[in-house]
Image (cartoon, rainbow, N blue to C red; front, side):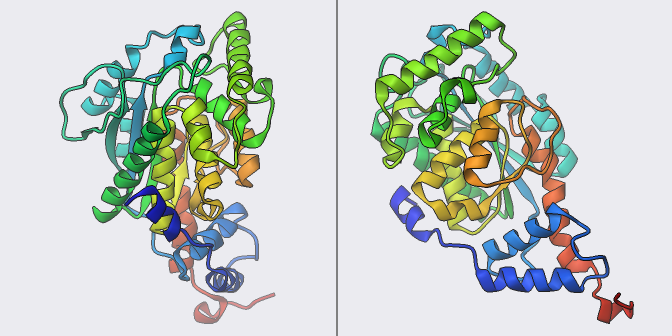
Length: 350
């Protein structure tokens, strides 16, 4: 699907299904509200599916989008750029943390090269969809052309389509890209209006001098490009990354098919803000998996009015927080399918 046909397919949450889910939650054999945020999550998922109860969000499929970044030249991270390709090879071989978590939840993993700086080889679970060999330096010029940003967006849409056609009932966002927290911070600043210092974190754990440089780079990028959130494609191209763009498309693709998509950390959160700028109703498909320690993630989730399910001090990325949250998402729906009502169980109400 093209970007335009995908956006046209995204619809608001279904209010009658949400009302039915709330009414069903009130009749289940438990005190009303006793499952806390999981109850409201089940209601949201009913609204997304336009059905009560909604389908079980299993099996899950994880898409890890990988790209490199020209802004690496600004010294915003101590990690060498070749680590991106090395970690992609690790994902393909099954040796990364996300692979372990995927096995834990019986989820599939697809790794997508959408912008890695060198040519990659090997693996049935590696998709070559490279748009360009890394972005340009967003502190100096536009990171991508609009055509490149669109190509990455539509790659994400096509990946979502393929995974859903393959049987996935829940999509999980993953990412890999050395220096990618810098464009993530720039995107969140651009779309929320927050200051650079408010959205920029330490990423892989940079020292004070590198952190100050990183904040300055984000601030300079915003000043240079003067991004307009009402023009999401232009803004994404100016300060985003290829994996951020592909993730935004992936989220939009899930929303168009009314399939839940679990948002991981700050990279995915920045992509979610982009997706919401294209289609505000896409937020109905988004589930915030966890609260990243990256400050920009909090700003992004607040902007989207999403509450994270977990708060574990995570900052790894890869889709790890989304994978850990997936059983909670499934559990919230299973309650609607399997818990007896007061009437059916013969239990007295208060």
